[in-house]
Length: 354
Image 1: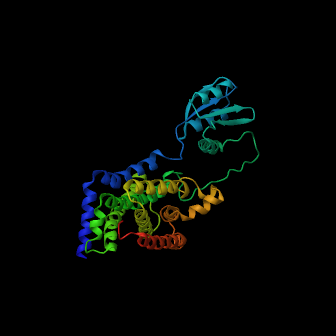
Image 2: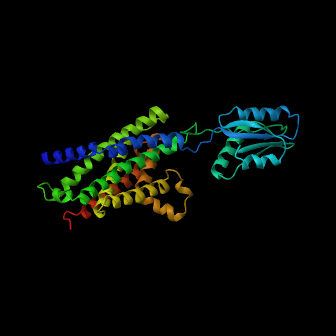
Image 3: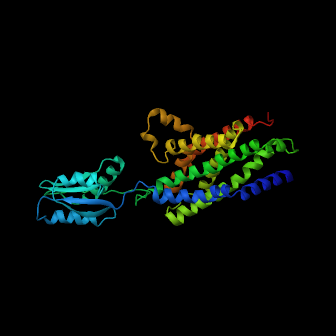
């Protein structure tokens, strides 16, 4: 036990003395939370809006529509257009993304479709604002009542924060662990460690413990930042959320050990953990793109991405407030991955260097 503690202390000392490693471990997660929580969002706000009304004396209904749109947080009234040709000119010059055209039959919404996702979103917003206005006198009007569960403000951070948690924990655990062990191989110090009286398993565990501790610190920082700064509440059990996160951290550490067993240099470990893990996490985990919208082949491939199951579990616990029964499948998959990858990585680890 004394040898194990000495190795852990040595690894902590190496991490603390490396300034760039400390920046990656402690500063990068906060930067990513700020970017994904505020800058990178699917919400649309302050959209430039123009109005074209061929009637020089607009009626009260049309004026009320314009007032309703311009007073919302989504649209900014830029002005009125004098001819239909000005509509295309507004889009080509980048002065606005939405034009409301009034006519005898009601209002028409013309949007810039060069970015389809944004166009669909802002048209939906405009339609929801104008839903209370009818296009003509009707004896009765049915107005549907819409209720959004779990995210009534439609904040994009509710969707991105669980994904960022998975990406950060994968970055800290897998990438940094694989680079740390590969650095020992590249510098030749791994030979000294392997010929020491300490068992190889003890050396491996001692090198993973510091990154496990730092991952727990990052997890606490992320949860505090999301709750107190971004304003995303933890509706479910905090203990269950922490337990699922620890299982995912174990999976990530096992992946890092597996990469280190085949990578001989830091560059190889960085490329394998960076390009081989981060891109699938971003594209196939449901962090940004819904898995249901993917082709069948990619949906099947996403099942082997650990972050997919972790992100789904975090959303159920943190956003929806569900209990253990709701995340039983995700937790079972993560535990199975942790056991399988841990056994494989330890089996592949070379205790003799050629």
